[in-house]
Image 1 (spheres, rainbow, N blue to C red):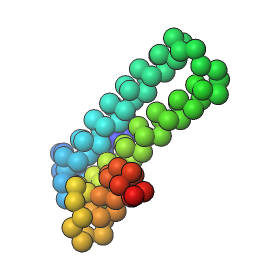
Image 2 (image 1 turned 90 degrees about the vertical axis):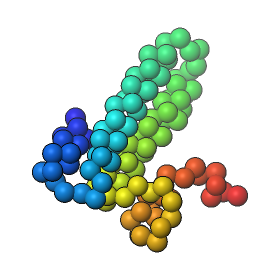
Image 3 (image 1 turned 120 degrees about the vertical axis):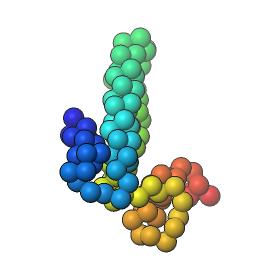
Image 4 (image 1 turned 180 degrees about the horizontal axis):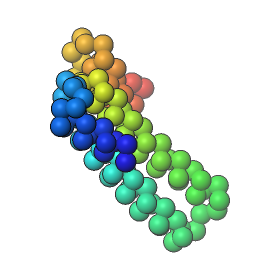
Length: 106
């Protein structure tokens, strides 16, 4: 809900940011992440996992959904895309968090 208000404020020009559409991206990311979490939670009753396995699955699905939303929300605050490293500190921080972690573990 709050991300939707943020998107409305940036798209109407009430709050000026570098790239206003990133707020809409963060809002849609939150909606899709929430729907994904609901779908996974609905499937729990069909799985034959114990409490420990269900907890691990919930954490394994929840952390990426929430962190993806959080990174896009911060990117919309900063007005950067984070698609490539540009030398701009804010953009480079977002680019670091947008890359797959497996690239850094090599």
